[in-house]
Length: 300
Image (cartoon, rainbow, N blue to C red; front, side):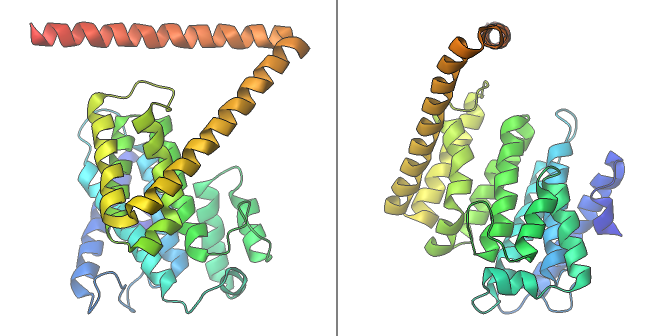
């Protein structure tokens, strides 16, 4: 019942269930022997479907966090890290779990839970993604690693939520990435490196399309450097970082070509696009000026 309340529309119930879940996670962590990342066999989260559903529900909570008020960032971060790292460990216990073998071995109850989880994670493509997995088809990126399909989807979704929303979500995301990556060896970290480093790259290099405070940018740089030095290694980090840079550059060039083509083919639509950009730039400039004035008043 507590797990279901993580998705409840009432914020009070979501917060209480999150605190109860944290107590449950702490109790599980205290009972784990000999490895602290191995779930106990008799826990309520012994099945990947249940653990994945909880992790997805916590992502939903991340999205629904208010931008103001008393927000327990550490609690939400700890819950997400425990759920994601435990899911990674649990899936890793399957001996060379291949893509088709894992999804085809699911029972009917587990399939129902996975389907709901994928729909919560991505309302638009969740159902089609799950049906593709269970039917033996490859995912969009052709990945056959079960951990990358599930955990990679979670990390990608968290990054998107953080970049689309406010500083609270971004701070939680950075802390989750840092803590989760610190529990992985180099090979495991490489599995998720692109999805983890992509939002960090956008924040550090100024590709978010919105104003990022110096505090958040500094935190992003610290997390990025920590992953490079402690988990991924310099050589592998440079490879992934370059891949991200080239990918974003390719997308940007493609977008510019499409904009030039639009100006010729559909000038009316292009004019509307320019008006939207002008309005957005004006709003951003106003926010920057307000921020500068507040900083001056604070210093005086």
